[in-house]
Amino acid sequence: MLKLVQFGAGAIGRSFIGQLFSRAGYEVVFIEIDSALVTALNERREYKVEIKDEFAETLVIKNVRAVDARDRDRVAQEIAEADCLGTAVGKNALANIIPHLAAGLALRFWRYGLRPVDCIICENILDGAAFIRSQLEKVLPGFELGRMIGLAETSIGKMVPIMPPDVLKSDPLLIYAEAYNTLICDKKGFLGEIPAVSGLDPKENMKAYVERKSFIHNLGHAMIAYLEFVERKGYDYTWQAVRDRDLRGRAEAAMEESGRALIKAYPDEFSEKNQDEHIQNLLKRFGNVHLGDTIFRVGRDVQRKLAYDDRLIGAMRFDLRHGIEPAVTAEGAAAACFFKQRDDQGKLFEGDEEFHRLVFPKGIDYILSRVCGLSGKDEIEQRIISQIKKHFGRFQDRF
Picture (cartoon, rainbow, N blue to C red):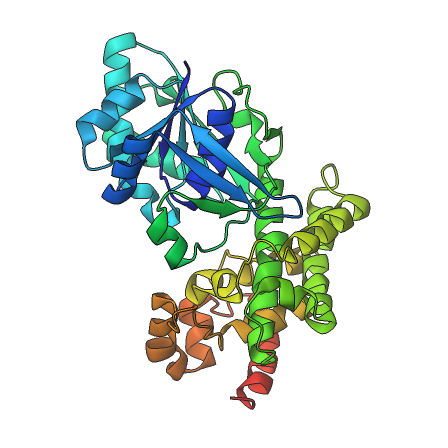
């Protein structure tokens, strides 16, 4: 049996990557830091994914087990024998897997010589492959890494809601997800043959699809969450906000701003027709009442989402570079500064609590400089700052 070694047994690791490879006949070995998940996976050797969509379905994902990420020797053994690798640990934890990956690749080399393996990077970050390669080069100097490991970036479009605490208490492995099951991946990132796994969608120009994910999909979620909050609509779920004609219209307008810029940047990939189809499909998925996705989930972690290259400021910069005025996107960026949505336990996301306690009181200039990374060094940055400030002042009058 073929084997996938998957770093991260969280929402995407279990509901998406593990699910796809298991159903394609792979044994899936999760490398996970959460000891409770490791124990449960090893006891059951299976878990359930409940599809929350128009047509409900329960998938039983079999042939799975787990290794504690702190056991570097065992992790290295698994990597040495793997047919494919995957990551879904989150941007901030990606560096933590490098020592394990390096140890596994070294052991693999000493056992088998140049026996390449591909790693599918499921992190929704730009240049993830370059980051991993640069880090591996530091700890494996002299190794021919370009012949040892392929690094394939992806665009993760699957939506997975926060699991209700009472459900997790009864079954810590159960995961909810939408029906969407397409994993766009970088065709050029693979050293070997692309795995014969239903759902993999290799693309020649991966950068175009990573930017589309951030500047349309992620942007759309952000617009819905942040505008909902400043307009004080009182919605808890994304499906409620999408059914609000005003909120949907403004989110759609921002997504269209990025859509037009993407067409200019990648005319061989995108057209008015396929961009409009993509945006309408996303809005339909955002409106999935069965999924129960929340305003809290899609809006939380404001400081990350206001970063220089992320869905709001990054989209505005991208739009302006391609001659598109991001007037509606600027409104969402300003609204993000006020976002204080609480979860179903009445708590703010930890990073958002910190933002409103330590950052927001210092004013919009501080936010634009320290959080958004905007110094006004060029005309594009000056225009972004001016547009956001205009909306910020308007919203501030309401609070």
